[in-house]
Amino acid sequence: MKTITLTKNLFFAACIGTILTLSVTGCSDDKEEQKQQKPASTAAVHDPFDHSHDVPVTDIQKHTFEHQFADQCVARELQNSVNKEYDKKRLSEDCMCIATFLMKDLTAAEAKKFITEHKNTRSLVIKYENAAYHCLQQKAQPKGPKLFGR
Image: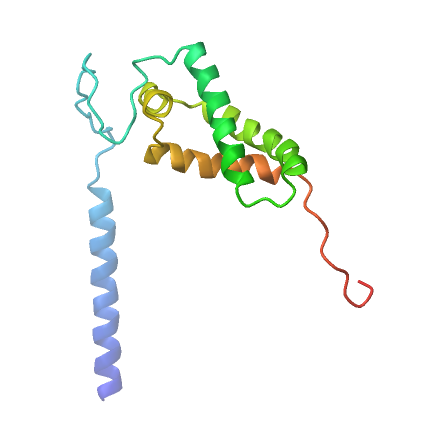
């Protein structure tokens, strides 16, 4: 008896659910909703996280930045070097690659801080890490030791 009542209730609930589902989807509008679009404002919204490209960096500033940054990079890396002559040749290529990579997306504020005040901004440090990864991954890595003839 309980099984029959349970089956009837389950069948009744399934029928009601099907009818409701079909009626709700049948009431939808065939027309597309007309969205009110806001007119584009001529004044750009200030985003504090985006650096402005309003002030261009001159080629002279970029060139000065590139050479000063490469020289600073070589000097910093040579501090812990054992063979300074050999490492200077090797590091000058890597540091120039990093400086050129940084120069492509250099902002006026970063150039001014680095050239005049000799300070590295946080954004420049982040770009440096990205540039170092990019430039140093291009080089062939030395092969590791072969164990057990593999």
